[in-house]
Image 1 (tube, one colour):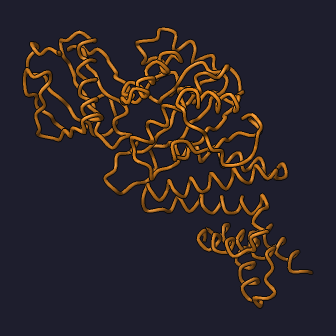
Image 2 (cartoon, one colour; image 1 turned 120 degrees about the horizontal axis):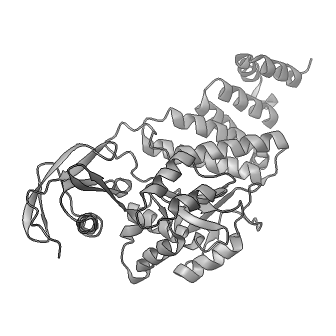
Length: 399
């Protein structure tokens, strides 16, 4: 029996240790690239992902162009991310895995491998936008998670139109990561590109956004009565993700809004799902236009939630945490909703535009009328800790 057949037999029996022993016992001159790849597969199956990556990197450069090589590297990177001690490292490894599986797809693998690559890409996309990535550091859960979805009436996206529209909107050229000229489809699901010197991705997901989250967000949009109806009817969505974690947070946020705003021009687009609300296409684009004037798109970034309680009107911000800031809550006021929303807008704008920092025990002056106490504690309408601003007097007004 040849060694190749024996390795296949060990693989099917799950005896991956035997494969490692057999290959490591060979003379270096006898270890071909094919055996090196077998070694990497065995390491992956044993959970020794760093060794798998090391083996793959030792292969001759010309043999690294196979879809299986990129699949094995993506596999190692993906599972190594789960063992990473920090969220930053996790994100970097997941982004590397995303690129590897995406490259494997572009090399037209056989059907079984193609299916697995697409499945991993879907998992990675979900993981990159998850609030559950382990993070022992004091960073906020959602810090740096710049992503949103464009709801679609069908799984169709015109890549060339997007590139043209993006330049028309922002006078910025897009640099693609590969030379593929096909439109983005469920069969070619990922578009990775660079704009404003930051890497981002648009992923076609030929199914609706998670129903529970999307419908809840749509119901929160008190500015769009038809949000729930439109959300219920969408058939697919584009997931927009900023991949360059090293770029400044503000620059990442600006690029996300630019991409999403331009995607609103797609013929199949029906709404923008930010995680906190579902926006009308026209409103989202109008709100983003302030970027051209050098202003920050605060209303694209932050959703200002309002709700009633038996004791009055309450409100909160949703989106500050992506920038590493605490969300703000104001509860049980006797204000009109528009007035409360205006105060929340002013406070969020101070945090983002003026770099204001509010901490537990501080006081904040709103419209110059009164210093209000700030307390940091468990969120009321939001998970995690938030800043609570207490209104001691109903006489406060906003200029």
